[in-house]
Image 1 (tube, rainbow, N blue to C red):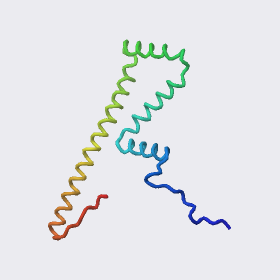
Image 2 (spheres, helix red, strand yellow):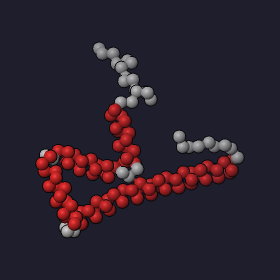
Image 3 (cartoon, rainbow, N blue to C red):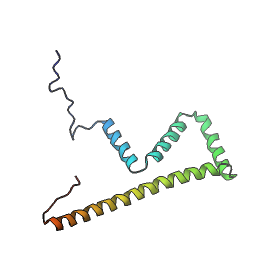
Image 4 (tube, one colour):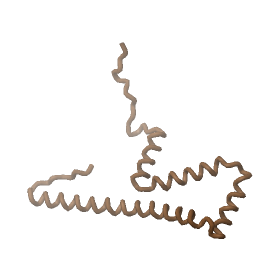
Length: 124
């Protein structure tokens, strides 16, 4: 028989590993609405990194020429719209969170006034 007593991993607030930190950063990015933007940047950076060095200069030159003669204008505008949308979603999420907190405080004050007791906070 195997004894599983006291075999739990010793994770605490002082013992955070690299993968836990990466997970926390990714969750925070997704919650703030920046997950798509970071993922797209990561994919583009990975593709550029994996390209041979001889192909990189002609690619940059073709992109600049495409932007100059407006043949890549649609792609460029799509990227700009994606970035602006992600930033606006993050800002709107922050505004909505502030409004939720304000309404929660207002509700707690009203309940305290009606009951005559200090109810504390439900937010931890």
